[in-house]
Length: 193
Image: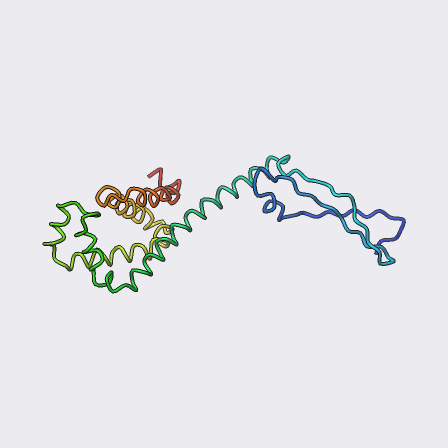
């Protein structure tokens, strides 16, 4: 314990301050000290504020952190859509047998006449192959989109699949909602090659 007649200086780095100041509306963090006396009594100091954005380095760190968090949340949302869709499909007899895709091809709402004709005369094995391809793609997209060797192929397959959904099946809103997050998967090194 320090004696009564000496001054002791303390310092503390608040590593959670960046998480507290989560946007530009709340960049100020407040602190106060609680002092314990020898007699057991306590006293609080006056609250002081620390404006995190006075320090440009902290501001840049916070902005980068928040931007990356938003990107990762959007990517995670797409992963959830794909994985849960695939899990539903692999537990569905209609998808496992290829019937779900076959009847989608024959549906007037989702298929133009030429596609109905192709689906009607196509060997059913091809439709089963396409159904399994879709299920496998959706289930493994989270892994393939993060692995450098398969990232480009996964992105292109997804873009082609959702373009088909938009232009052939006329589900524009769904297709574009699924296509927009694809840009988040393109890394800087991918854009340069």
